[in-house]
Length: 538
Image 1: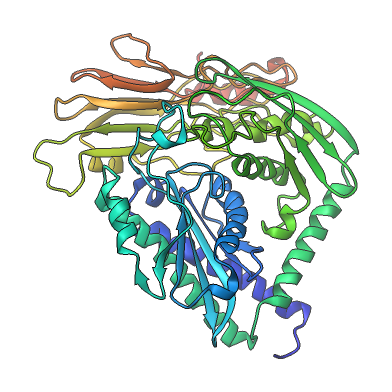
Image 2 (image 1 turned 120 degrees about the horizontal axis):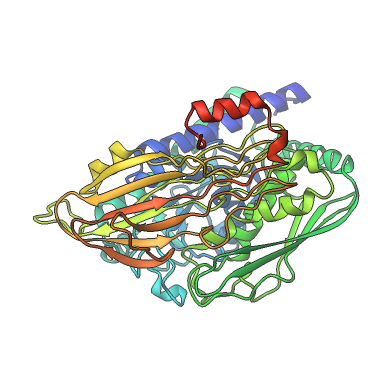
C-alpha cells in the first residue's frame, strides 16, 4: 500500500462521509414507511472491523446514529469477525442493544475485499408497525410492544432467512410495507459497500486501518481542544415533564474536566409503568448530541469525537430502564435530554445555549381499517411527524415547528392524505405560542384532522409539554403548552390510545418554545415584524 499523506487521509475521510450519505439516500428513496422517506427517520454509517464508527450520514437522527454506534459492538460480539462471510447480513431490534425501541430495525453488513473483512456498514430506520399494541405508550412491558428480534442473520452468504421474514410478515398489520423496509435496509448497506470498494481501488489502499486511526485520533483531539476552552466545574439542573400517570423529573449534573465531559443523571425519577422509559443507549445518544451541539459542533460525529463524552444514569431510573420495561415511546423522554443538559451548561456558558423548546416530537400516530382493502396490509397504521417550537437563542428567535433535537422533517399533508383516508383541514402556525422575550421562542402549530370515509380512527397519543410547557430563560416567558382535543370542545389525553368518531375533528396544538430575556428589551422592529406576520396578537 502506498504512503499516505495528511492530505490523502483528509480526502479519503471526506469521501467516506459522501459514501455514507449515498447509503442514507438509498434508504430514504427506497423505504416503504413514510416516516423514513418523507421525514428522514433513519441513520447510516460505516465502521471499521473493530466496530468503531468512522463516519455517519448527514441525513438521519441523533437517536439512531449515536445508539447505532454502540449497537455494532453488540453485533460483533454475537457474530465475531472471524465467523463473518461475504453475503452475510445481520439484523436486530433489541431496544437495549439497538436504538431504543422495537420499531427501529438495525441492519449490519460486513464488507469484504479480496477475501478480507475491511469494514461494516450499519443502518437503522423506523418501521411503521411491528405488531403488538402499536406505536404508543400504553404497554406495561416490552413484550406487549411488538415483535422482538434478537441478533439474527437476515442473509446467510446471500441466502435470505425466509423463516425470519415469514415471522416478521406474520406479526405486523402492514406486512407489505414492513418487508419492503427490511429489504431497503439491506440494500442501502450493499450500495455503501460497493462505493467503499471503489474508493479503496481509486485510492490504492488495502485496508482502512490507518485512515480509521487518523479519523478517531484527530476527532477526539479536536473535541478535547474545545473542552479545554470551557470553564471547569460541575453544574446541575432539573426538568419536570408530563410523564404518563405522574410527572417525571429529569435531573442532571454536568462535570467539565480537562479530559472529558461527564453527565450523571442521579436524582432522575424511577422507571415508569408505561412505555415512556429509555434504555441507556438512547439516553447516551441524545445526551452526547446535545453536548456536541454546544461544545464542538463542527467536529464530525464518529467514535473518536464521541469518546470525549461520558454518560451515566442509575439502573432502574427512567433513563436507564431495564428489560422488560416498556420503551416504545422512549423519544418522549429521551429527546428532552439536550435541553436538560443545556440547563446545566447555561450556568457556565450562558451565551451558547438556548431556552427550552418543545424538544420531543409530536408524532401523530393514526390507525384504522379500510373497506375493501386489497393492498396486502390490514388497514393503515401511519405516523404523521409534527413539531413544536424550539427555544429562543441568545442572539436570535427560536425556530418555529422545527424538530430539534431529532432533526426529522414534518410529513407533508399531501403525502399523509395519499396514504391515509383522512382529511387535513388545517396545518398552520399557532400565533402567540412562542414565549415572549428579548428573543422569542419558536411557534408551535395547529393541525386539524377528520376521517374522509365516515369511519372511526384511532389516535395513539404520545405527547408531552402539555402540563409542563417549555420554560423561558432569564426573564423570558414560557412557551404555550400543547393541547390535544376535538373541535367540538372535548379534551383528549396527551398519552394513550383514543378513538376519534366519524364526523369529529381531531385538533392537535403543539407547544411553543420558551423566550429569553425581558420582553421589554425586544427590538421595536422585531415586535412590529411579529405583528405584521401574524405571529403574535396585536
